[in-house]
Each structure stands twice: as C-alpha cells, then as structure tokens.
Length: 186
Image 1: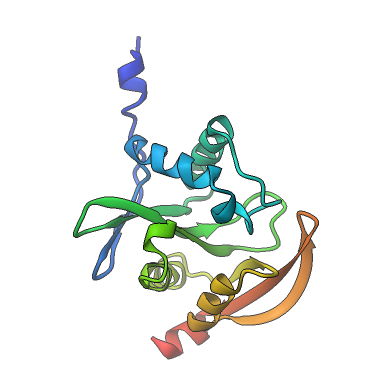
Image 2: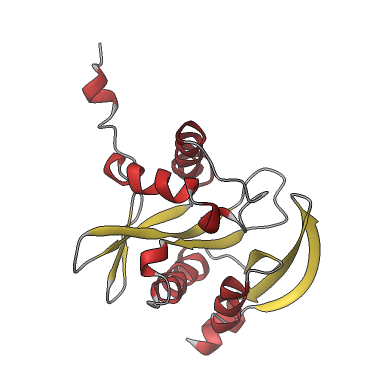
C-alpha cells in the first residue's frame, strides 16, 4: 500500500527545456505555494478566465489540471525556474483544453519577474518545441481585451491578431503564428 509520502512523490516525465536564464521543467509540489499565491492575486488573475481570484482549493485543482494536461495531451505548461536563484518565476506552455478554439501558447509570469524578458525568452523556446518537436502547423494566443502586456508579447513573438471572439463573457483577441512564420524569423 502507498503511503501519503509516496503519493506526493509521484513523478511525471516530461521534457526539460532550457534557455540562457531559465530552466523549463515539470511542476513540483514545492512550487505550489507560490502558484496558489499567484492564483489568489486579483491583479495577476484579472485577465484569466472570468478574472476571479482563486482560493487555495481551486488553485490546487487548476495546478492538477495543468499537470494532468501532459498526461491527456502529451504537452502542456512548464514551470519556469530562474537558473541563477533556483526560484519558480512563472509558467509558459502549450495547451488545448476541452472546448478551446485551438492549440494555444500561454504564459503567466510572477509579478516580481515581469518586465525581465522571461516571458519572451520562455515562449520562444516553447514555440520552437511546438513547431519542431510537436510539428504543429500553428499556435494561437488568447488575450483578453485590455491585457496590453500580453498582446505586446504576442506581437513581439511574431503572432498576428486574427480576430476577436467572446470567451468567459469578455472579448478575447486571438493572435496566431504559423510554423513557417516562426521558422522564418528564427
């Protein structure tokens, strides 16, 4: 019989990626406290879903969903670790939840590390993985109206605004990049 200790040490095998400053790795139980704090932050959450902060219980469910996406789809979000300090600084990845418009690259950088270039650095590496390893034809980013920081990042990554849809009772801009566009600028 497994003990509670053994249950919390189950490891998910997923690729580890690197950039100059970041390790893109699996989420760990030790990351959860910071993740839960992020999910409870109304400023961090304002453009995610309906914009509601999550309590710890719902943050746990979201955390498990992020990890479970790897099992169900074979790809997902990576935890970002600053190699110099060993800290969890956010997450970037590719996901395709049920009823989503398409395969999306998304990001969430801890407020203490925003404006550091981590989002761009990690998203570029994840796009490379998506196009070269997963052989995706294109990726989209769903960005709520008003989230100019993410819209600017999408544009910097080479994505183009293609249309606006309504999701979670709010207008959401869809940005898109094809494999050919990404590889041409790499």
